[in-house]
Structure formats: C-alpha cells, structure tokens
Amino acid sequence: MNLTLQFVPFEEINSLAPEKRINRLLDIVKKDKIVLLQGRLKPSEEAWLIQKTMEHVSKDFKGIELCTIYPELKDQKVLSQMKGLLVKFLMGAREGLTIIGPANVVKEIKRDPGKIELLTNIKA
Amino acid sequence: MGNFFTELFSKLSALFSKKNDIKLGLYGPPNAGKSTLANRICKDWLGEEMSTVSAVPHETREVIVKEKIEVKSKGKSLTFNLVDTPGIATKIDYEDFLKFKINKDDAKERAKEATKGVIDAIKWLDNMDAVVVVLDSTINPYSQVNITIIGNLAARSIPVMIAANKTDLKKSDIKAIESAFPQYPIVGISADKGVNMEEFYETLFKVVK
Image 1 (cartoon, chains in turn blue, purple):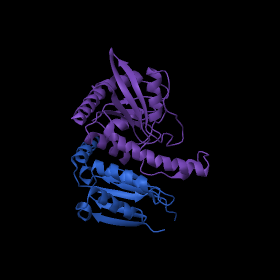
Image 2 (cartoon, rainbow over the protein chains, first blue to last red):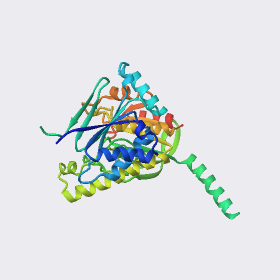
Image 3 (tube, rainbow over the protein chains, first blue to last red):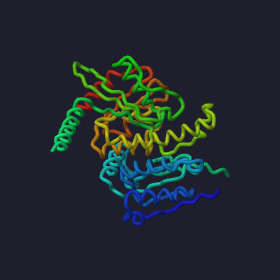
Image 4 (cartoon, rainbow over the protein chains, first blue to last red):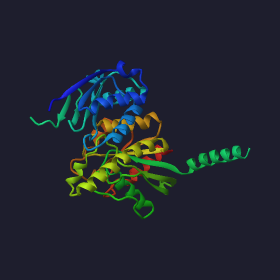
C-alpha cells in the first residue's frame, strides 16, 4: 500500500462555505490520502469535521486522525506555547499546518514542538 | 395577540428556568471517566447512580440527563441538571470492541451507536451553561480532540473546569494537564474512589458563579 500526501493550499478552500470546505477535505481523506492543509480550521470547523466524519464512518472508513501544528510557536516554552496556541485558535488565525489522515492508514499522530510523528498502519 | 403572550411567557420561563437549573455538561474523550464522575456526583447528592460504566470504550452512547441535583459547598447551594455525554472521538472501529469479547454484530451496532453519540455530544455543546472537561490523567493531554473540545467551549464563552481523573493510578500526571491547559482551573480527582471531591465541588462553584 502506498502512502499518499495531498497538499491543499488554504486558498483552495477559502472561498467555499464551511460545509463544502469540510466536505472537500473529507473527500480527499476518504480516498485514503493524507491531507496537508496549509493553514488551520476554526474550532467550529473542527467540530463540524468530527461530526461529518462520524456520519461517514463505515466498514471501510474508520474515521480520521487530526493534528494541527503551529510552527511559529516551536521555539517557545511549553506553557507559553499552549497559551499562544489557544489564543490563536480562538481568534480564528489561519497560519499553521493541519494534518488529516484516514484512521485506517494513520494509526496515531504524535505532536512534539519541533516535529510530528505519523504512526501508520502500513506493513512493510 | 395570543401568540405574542405565549411566546413572551415561554421566553420568560426559559430565562428563569436557566437561572435556577444550570445545565452542567461532562465532556471529554472516551474512557476518561465522565460517567464514573456523573455517578459519583449523583451518589454524593442523590444517593443513586445515573449511568452505566465499563472498561469498553463508548459505553455511554447517548446523552443522559439527571435533573435537579442540589450540590452544596461551604454553605452555598446550586441546583444542576447534570448532562453526561458520549466521549468525543475522531475515529471509531468496531474491531476495537472485539478485543473486549463482544461479538461481531454487537460490536458493529455499538460502533454505529457510538458515531451518533459523538454527533449528539457536539450538538449539545450549545445547550450547556458550564462544562467539566474530564481527562484521563494517565494519558498525554496534547490531543487535538482535547484542544477542539476546549476551543469550542471557549468560543461559546461557556465556563470550563478540568477534572484530571484517575489520580489513584500510578501513571497519573496532573502536571502534564496543567502544562497543556494553564488558563483553566484543574482539579485532580479519582471519581472511582471519590478522592478530592470536596475540592472539585469548591472549584465547580467558583467556575459556575
């Protein structure tokens, strides 16, 4: 099985209504591709993404693994990082990187200030 | 004209009932101990339990409400409608339930119900007056689900406190939760053993008032 990463610039979904924006991302994930979204979703959009994901769960689609990283925060201490992270999250700031992977391909996404680890279900 | 007065009366009664009976939601990922905490609160103040608990994830698959729980702390009292919600997750695989010796058909049904439960839990966010986010203190708190839940509560200006549950277990690490969410009041508890519930209620009063 191949691992496919699809880069999605935020401009590509920016003009879409929130529901269509989420559907566009889910359509990619449901094709067993990992979305690398240049930017991040608002809290309400993430909640919407989880709701829509649950509606699509089936024998072949188990759901998603989701992780947002904030590169501008990586040099700060953990405490100020999390404070900054929540403030930016609530303000609806869009900078960052969002990774959305299909759960049957991505087992877990481990977050670290300087790196991200994707643990996959792919057997060598 | 009759409709006007009916509408006005319903709006006024909604306003006053909201003031009297606070909807307190228990939110968090699956298996964090939301239903165990709901049972602890009910046992403490009503002498009876409200939810079934299990080691199998997604035991609570429907929103459960227990009305009129009067909680007292330091001479003050508050009446809550306690809302126990299904755990919020981004993935549900029926095969995970097979490990708990649940047969395939039941596991599939459980998974189907669990997906609906997640959707309902998120929909209920708008109805809450205050929320206790229940986290398993033995698990790394830096998960996107936790950030999404807390971010959505903050975006709705809903008062939040965090219960760092399972402090009776060796791997419990309250400091990790404090580092992850420094702007929220956090109380370490063991809902199962009833440890530190007094501090939990005191903090709850501060958050709600």
